[in-house]
Image (cartoon, rainbow, N blue to C red; front, side, top):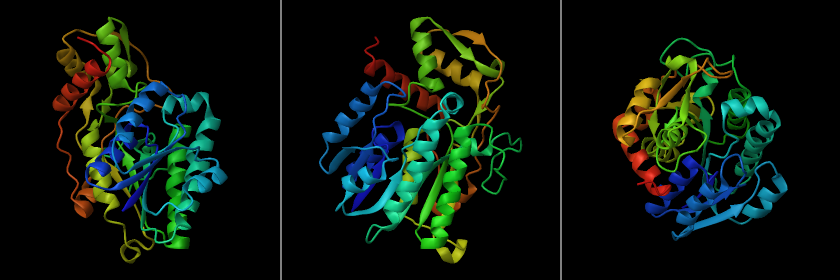
Length: 326
């Protein structure tokens, strides 16, 4: 079977493609390789994927429908895992147009591409815990209202869910949206807290601790995320139970941790103390995230298995190796 993985050079896309290849699948990966963060990291991920048999890569921008159709013409794709997006809550405040092109136009183009593929079976796509906005009821549940986003990034992800619901209704195309909760691990993104803090601690630089440290995150290790994605893609939703073949699930660790605990674990693993610079809450941020995962656990047997202590140890070991740190 041939899978399309968008954002294949990205953090989650790389791990997803790598796991599919390990189980003997064929993967067509696409990515525009933008410079939102160091492109070298993306090329290093791709180099590992290209070393595997069964992997084909194309550099293409999802917002260019003509290029997308031309690139994938004739590819025997039966399932797609759409992970490409312009990431970053804070960056969406500075550069909103990038999010409209990548997250809205790009998502629409993937919907159009998939609905016209012969024999297509299922599209799984990335949403985000950020859609819950300023909700204060914890844990966040899929039945909660999500019509008060506090960042443009969150608004685009909710819009993607609505577009997918419409396409499932109109064209009966099976789709599953996954609201990711604070994914971390080896080969992660350098704009995220885990990487930023590790780099600063190792180099003796101060770290910015927002909301004066009074924050919680449902940190979810990358291996658990990928296991959830692959379990879901193998089980498309049925229109008989949902009205349209479309479901949206939280996918998280179901165990929020204080930000200061995460920093303490990083300090222990690295062997150095952080220089903490306490800051107020940033625009677009929320104080806490916490995933109710009852739905995905019931429907797909999803059960995260990597505690934060183990995940941080694995991340730090990888980070030191990748960056040549003794």
